[in-house]
Each structure stands twice: as C-alpha cells, then as structure tokens.
Image 1 (cartoon, rainbow, N blue to C red):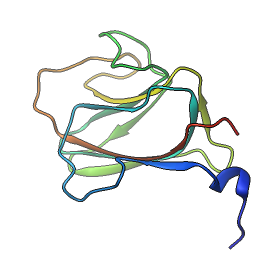
Image 2: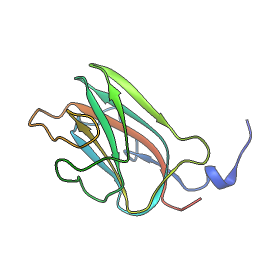
Image 3: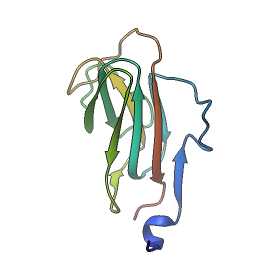
Image 4: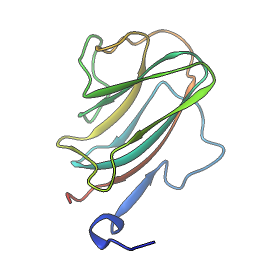
Length: 123
C-alpha cells in the first residue's frame, strides 16, 4: 500500500469520531465549508434516494441534487469518488428523499445513517 500525502493528509470522518451509537437521521450536514468528498456510506431502513447537495444546510423541497443513488430497504449504498474525490464549493449535505432528481422531504421518521470520508482542504 502506498501513502499519498496529497490525499491522506487532512482527511476527516463524519461522524467524528465514528460511533456505533450514531443515531438515525433524515439528513446530515457533513461540512459547512468547501472541501472534497472521497467516499460516503449511507444506510436506510426504507427504500428511498440518498442525495448529495453542495450546501451548508438542508435545501428546500424540490431542490435538485448534485448526485443521487437509490438505496433499498435495510441496506447500504456507497459513493466512491476515488483518490481525486468530488469537490464541494459551498459545503456538503447528505439527505434522503422519497423521489428521484429533486429533494422531497417526507414526514417519515428518521431512518438513515451516514459515514463520510472528506477533506476540508482542496486537493
């Protein structure tokens, strides 16, 4: 295994520190400053869409997302952006949505868990 200081230095984890007791949520504000996301795991109790937003707070209903992935009931999805990562220019918010393409905030109970590897410094 090689060490790449450009990628390895300054990497953070969400939640910090990672805890097996993390409570379930409907969304998570990962970062409120620009940065790079390298990977994100998302767990969902119900089938729905997991969305990434370049924002510092949860966007309003009908806001288009930067990227999305379908998550089945009681399963995990993984976003992998490799060594280069995916750059966010404002901040990083991950959310669940009941519809594709645009955020739909449902009144359902919190049923997701998020684990992210990111850097607050641009690469």
